[in-house]
Amino acid sequence: MSHTLRLGLIGAGRWGRNYIRTIGALPGMRLARLASRSPDSAPLVPAGCQIFAGWRDLLDPRVIDGIIIATPPALHAEMALAAIDLGLPVLVEKPLTLNVAEAHAVLARARERGVLVMVGHTHLFHPAYRAVKSMQPRYGRIHAIVGEASNRGPYRPDVSVLWDWGAHDVAMCLDLLGAPPKRAAVTILEHRPVEGGIGESVQLELAFANGVSASLRLSNLSEKRRRLAVQCERGLLVYDDLAAQKLIVTEGTSEQAIGIADDPPLSVAVREFAAATAARSRDLAGLELGTMVVEVLASCAAAAEASAAGP
Image 1 (cartoon, helix red, strand yellow):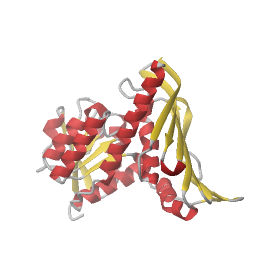
Image 2 (cartoon, helix red, strand yellow):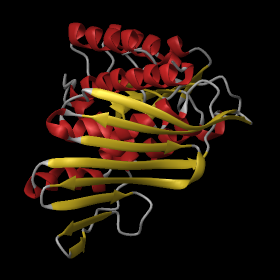
Image 3 (spheres, rainbow, N blue to C red):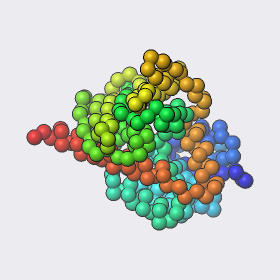
Image 4 (cartoon, rainbow, N blue to C red):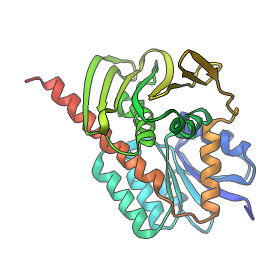
């Protein structure tokens, strides 16, 4: 980059604070503006960073080069559209939106204006997941994917575990298979009110072309797990974010741990967004995938509602 990239951030909640720390630790960029109504935000930002209570006041392409949106997803579309209209590149947290129409509106506007938009499906930037994707072709066609994603929380009043946790696993499946599923079925295993929101455990069964299946278990009511097993014709690739060895490859009776770079995925995402912004990239592959994720999750949510309603 020929100059320090100036970034704006909307939102200083738990994930917004992760962005503040990440930007501060990376060379070639700085946080120039933050939109937050919290009085606790001032000590979090570097000297010279302007803080605005209103997010629209932050959007000024003369002062910032790109914008990161880390707010509740119901706000994503309005904020992304406003930034796109000003020609500001956008990195928006997952899920892109909570409904298909808004996702398509963002994609259409980005295409029309030729503005970069990326979606923060964090695990797509994880070096271990990327190793799975790059190694998979040598082990033949994918037969099945099994994913587990869980933790004790977070409990959100506005976003279900399907949209919160499922966005990651569905994104990885779509990225690996390159197409949406033909069918989606959802089983609600547990659903109960908890302090701060709803506790849920759900099972997603996705059927793709050529007989490929994906079985994804998601929960905010059990011990922390983040694991994706990809069964191929000639081997099994297992990405386990919480294991000491984050990628294990099994071929026949041989099991091998693959060395993975210790590079936090959020750092990778921000670096790549900054590089794409500096290069004036118009690549919308990440936005197209993010839109497809919203379509699949909306289909799953509809299936879950139909299942809950009964015959």
